[in-house]
Image 1 (cartoon, rainbow, N blue to C red):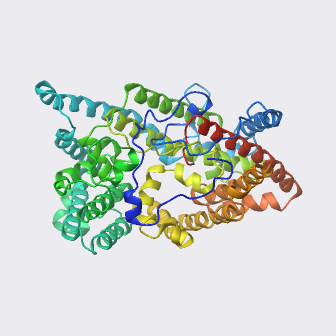
Image 2 (tube, rainbow, N blue to C red; image 1 turned 45 degrees about the vertical axis):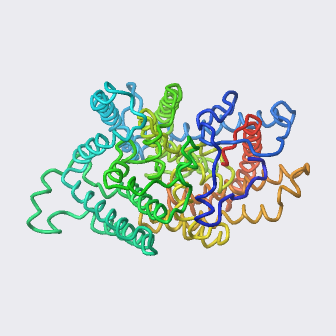
Image 3 (cartoon, one colour; image 1 turned 120 degrees about the horizontal axis):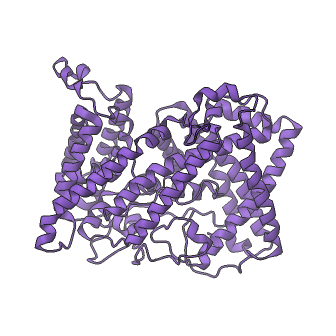
Length: 578
């Protein structure tokens, strides 16, 4: 992506979207690894775009100046939250009750976030579950491997179903009955309406109703369903609130129904009979006999991806079972190393920066605008890491099983200057799902503004039925518009070679970053009132305005480095489109 590449390249109709044939290269060999660009996780089907790249700027005087500013800014950004987390800080007593004992005597950690605390506490159990999965899978596969090496992995379907049912019984107890009832009703809708005009409306209406009802009735207690069923609550499982994570399952239900409907109408790509890229796998429809209840259960309840994703379409899942993708052991090993480094980074963060506890206790009395901004920034970094870790753990599990689901977090949160690129790389598998099942059917670029508002409204309500996330969704949709308008006003085809164009794009990137930080502070950190307080402190005092000016200058340097990083990717034949 060049400095001015702000355009959203998406097809405009279901048939055109589904009939695009992607490249045929192996997704794990399509990129030239090495150098600084290897810091970013591989994205399947990355390809070199037409045209030449600019000469490298890494060793120019301009960029040596940027390095000095960048290093100084990053060191200061680390120092400020560490100073705020010091026991000698005046606000320490306001949040100390939220801290826990650290790894070493005398140290404290900020383990106050419930979501990450749950993952951190349960990580050993998840590791044991993964080990049990592979041990039992090996025992199940031995008879098949003894006879002959199967050409596909479809023989694994019974094992996947049985293991998933046992896992769900442990997780949700007797509530597994509720999950299976919903799954069965959804499958009946698919079979009854597939190929007709009712298929997609019926699927969406059913799943949206289930999502709202799950929230409203808090998972439906058996006693309220029928007094004779009250005895079933005796075994609640280790994670009885099954409905909290059911929104992930809902995406798979819709994927199966819509993929089956499109297969009935032969919308998509006919099986080419050879290996294809990840993009094409999702669009290739299968024979009708593939869309069975057995395949459906194995897909929806697939153990490595059931709890948190990443999300994979039914077509892609079945393709990879029918024609296993060659995932080199070193690819899985590198990914495991990435996960461990990310985990160590998070553990270091919660030991030296107590930003979540400070935020939750609203212990920001007396803070300067600069300190408030760093409190907000590092809370956003924490949100990024707490989501990245479970997503990478479960994707690692799937990779070790021979399945290649989409990578959810392509870039570091701080390595984004474009809202469109940011949403492509943040929860990427969800973005791909949105494009296939919502964006394209709703009209794509023909109705960009209306479609964006509808999609971000759905995304917000899908996450949680709360006004705060609804406000976040509308802000996210609104903040895409400046980028779209800037692209139309200053197209790279006309101005891309002008000396000032890169700097104008960097200034636009700074503006985008401020908007994205504001929207995500509203949705995931301090809410609307907290964000308004932060903004008020920034613009209503001379110290705040002065800091904002310096911060924008530093962000300008950061965006220039992001541009050059992407140029370096293009030089190495990599285009991640984010």
